[in-house]
Length: 147
Image 1 (cartoon, one colour):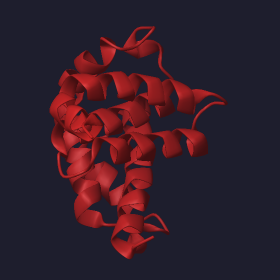
Image 2 (cartoon, one colour):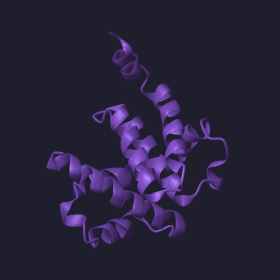
Image 3 (cartoon, one colour):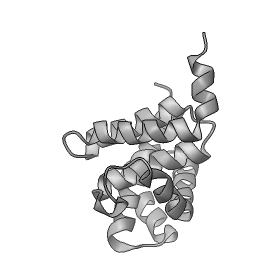
């Protein structure tokens, strides 16, 4: 695994922790970034990518929740904070990080769910983000399906 890729993976993990805190406390972006920067692992993270994720999710949270709601089996408010945070990150990457292939965005979210979510949470995250990807990355998915 390349160092840059590892940095992004760690950045996603730190972003998830920050989003968990945000959901429980309502802290603002500046406070969340300071908290993330104090994490022991932060020096190995891609700080720029972490900031992009947090800024993007906080700025687009309402739109991301609307996009996700179409593919959920329950109201957004009934999601666990961990699954909600993972789905927000995945939805943001699918919708706004077009440099990240859709399969990578989904896989990274699934890996976070395996590490931090409930027993079968990764299956739920995979299913929801797969449906969202078909809506927001249709052209990319169709191109990948061609021989």
